[in-house]
Image (cartoon, rainbow, N blue to C red):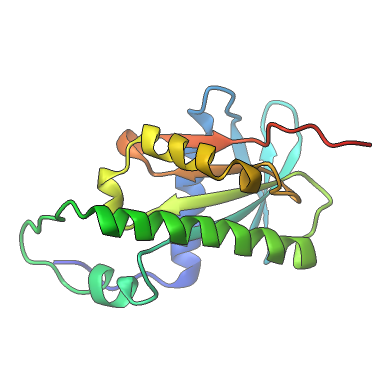
Length: 177
């Protein structure tokens, strides 16, 4: 049976610690330590090797606004299978894209951009067990224009993939001066 749903601060502390671990395992990952907590972005992290500071905006994506109270907060007794549902995966991915668009717009208006910003998206919906890294790579290719226009973010990181992996997406286009 599930325990009580953690408070926002507990969830954020859990997510930032897991993000730091996942990010360090990326091919060009960094070893981050917590620098400070704030609102926009949620955290500033310090690269323990170079001393560089990065802002991190944490977010999650669910199938709908009721997934958390109905699916994730209800007690579960025993094993419950999550059926493969292609329509649910399409919905999840469209919400993922909409979340990125929304976070980019909000960051342009409200985020402290003194340091490079990373958008960290916690993939935590049950249906995501069926999302392979190749599926997410295809999603990025199909939405290349979005991922090339994520400023003020310098990077989008999808994490909590299979085996606690992470996927980093950095814009491929060069800015014209």
